[in-house]
Amino acid sequence: MPLYAHLCNQYLKRESFDIHIRHQAGCYFIEAEGEQAGLERLADDIAADFLISTWLTDSKIELIDKLRGSKTPLPHAELQHDYCQHCQPRLGERQSPQFARLDLACDHCHGEQRLSPSGQGLTRSDLQAMARRLLESGCLNLPAGLLSSQAAASQLSLRSVQPSGRERLLICNPGALNSHFHLNDSQILALSSVEKPFITARPVAGHAKLTAPLYDLCFARNRALLVLAELLREEGVDWVYIDAPDLATSLVQIGDHWVEVNPDKRVAVCLPCRVEPLHDDAELAGYCARWQRGSIRVEPLDSPGVIKHESMSLCALHSVNLEHQQLKRADASIILYFSKTHGGQIDTLDSQQQVEHFFSLPVLPGRGEEIVASLEQGRQGRIWQKFSQRYPETVRRLQSLDLGQSSQTLSGLWAIAAVLLDLGSRSMAVADLSDALIAEAMRHQGTNSPRIDYPLVSNETHSSLDWCKTLGTVISFRLAEEGNSAKLAFGMMDSLADFLSQWIEFFDNKIGINTVVLAGSEFSNEVLTRRITLRVGKNFPLKFNQLLGIDSNNYAAGALYLHQRRRK
Image (cartoon, rainbow, N blue to C red; front, side):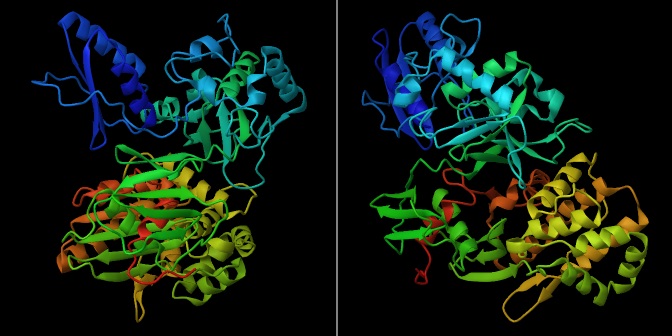
């Protein structure tokens, strides 16, 4: 948290107390000696200045015997926050005399220093004209560097901007959130946090305008967007569509912790590392990791570089063990790896650091006609005949499905199931259908659901999934329980979590599992993640990346510890 380090350095300058600061094991300390009344005022100031972060896990005040910190300022990365709770009311609220003063100086976050030259020249009249243009034409294009020094070209729109895939919304009226979306307190806090991330939410049932199953929401991340959102709110606009490549930080919740799927691609990450890697550098999935004595630096590449490696799962496993300093320990671990772009695997690492590849998701037929043919010819052929007779339109819809690059992912399986349950709009994009199944599962009230079968089939090297039998179970339940699509959608994810738990128990009896590692973008599925957390987490400690993303820069860091030579 660079902002926390910056604020610690600011408090170090206070002369009314003897203050020491330190950073240790992910914790920031401000130690102060003085009279009790003054210390109480200091504590109030700290509570007001240290903004809520999604990475904050605990905060407390305690009596200490002696000062253990130092007078040396803490090093930190460049601040990325353009405003804070001190300057936001002054420049972002209409009744303030300093409203829309983008160059307003702030002693706390110094957000004015991150304005681009063109952004510094924007006046209140300019921003009002931009808001009018959006309201009149329905669209507003924002050139690169206009809103902040590092902002890419972006677009605001009153209409959908994505032909397929999940839409992103900039919230203009936070007070109206609950009238449009299902959100819990944790999600609202995350939206309001200093990081201003994207959080996935389901719109309320029957919404007149929000017809997609899921949306990614965010609050204004820079000063210009903050003012534009306020101007639009006054015109009765609660949200607008946003297409902004630089606003890529998406968070998901695993247990009580928020994790990044795709970190901010403008920011390099440095990880402390006690174990020297097997390679000095590695390029994978658009990132480069380099060993620097005592640490590993991971940064985005200008060009994509190596996108995929045959050991993505193992790279992800090594990256989590790296974060948790478990490399070369005599601990056995197993990884549940499910990615929307790189497939899905389950691998184990025993106490001797020997790898066993246990499971890979099957390669589903890419075209709908092939999927239908497989269901007709399989052991569930008789039940498929009944289904075809009762739901001929559903079968025709399935025949037109094209899984494309998602044929070896959970999202591909979810998309087929969504069609079988008649979910989703006319869009046949895999991402939209997968979202439709997840949103339907969110609708389910309670924890009881049909048990969907996930039988294993084995080949010479590993196990996979008899996907026809899995879908045959879904078909059977739909024929028996018409109208229970929410329960069936939930059952698909809950049953998978239960089967995963059983497979982990098997390996625990075989090699003794100390840690279960979670990685991959499929864990942005709120329902699946929650059920795995409950079913697996009750018996095994769950670990995942937090300093790194779970499906991005983690691969390059983990690739430094691959035993085999990397392909370039």
